[in-house]
Image 1 (cartoon, one colour):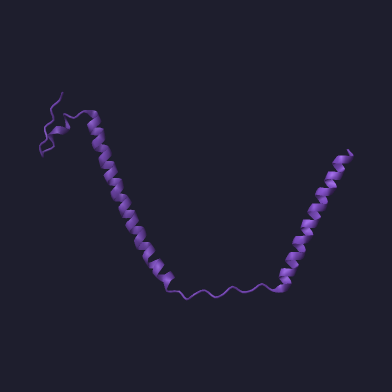
Image 2 (cartoon, helix red, strand yellow):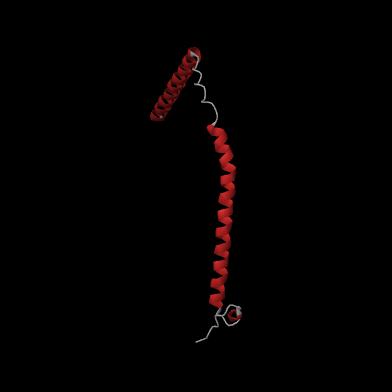
Length: 100
């Protein structure tokens, strides 16, 4: 078994097993990505803070405008008309299949 010198100078890097070197690199990558993630969250929070403050200070929205009754009646007439025509076309197609 290899003996590894654990002094502060870092002289044990040359005598390490490749898996230990891989593990050290992996830890450095994870440490870097964690720091990067924290910075991104911090920057996103800085951006969201003024936007939320602006949204909080706005006046309440006005109530929605009611639809005109004539527009509602036209929509109902067209909707019912299309449903009736669709039903009639399906019924007509069924009769054509029965005759053939």
